[in-house]
Length: 276
View (cartoon, rainbow, N blue to C red):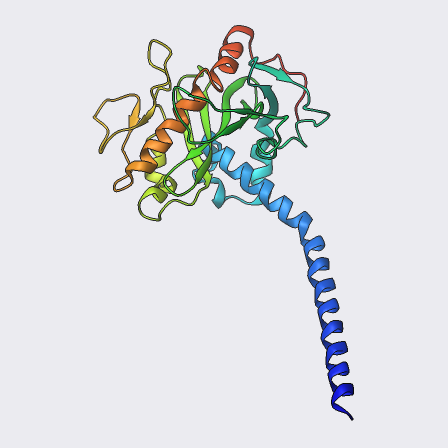
């Protein structure tokens, strides 16, 4: 066999292997896509349930300790809705997308579905926010009465954008819980936002001061005993602590959810017509 024939055979074999491997990887990606989407939805549901305290309230553990069926059963108390942040009102869809298909995080990447964040009173460190948010209404399992609202929140820490959920009790001023489901903060420092004992400090804290200004946040060091607005700061993570304070106050301000929360107080929670 000549050198030329040998090189040609090597090229053919390499090409075939590349094609076969590409087909295998593509096939695996397609086959796993549905499972990945289901896992992402399940993780989202876990974080919402933990912010609302539903898993701990019924089972005495966080949602990560529950079975998939238990999570799905608890989540029957939670109904998502789309909210126009500029009007504070519920809407049925966004550009033809209903509540199940609308993704606010994708909307931030669309010039038509986002707004610039310009000179906010509380700076979340982001350039844009979505025009339409997806919020979660929690109802009593038996009476079906409104119990809580869970609000997606996000903002810059030291190294990353922190994405989480802030749950408010039905007075819309008392915090039920705060949880972060995605961030890249330093483990043991800013990463302590995942610490269960730190997260427990948020329950019962007050979001607004008597003048209606967002006041919940992190103290510099240990929160003073009896302080109804602050939790302990994150040791060695000043920038992350400041970022968490700013993102909570930003989303509670007139620039984000405050108009919506005022709308609920004035018109009730039965206004929305869409949901699943």
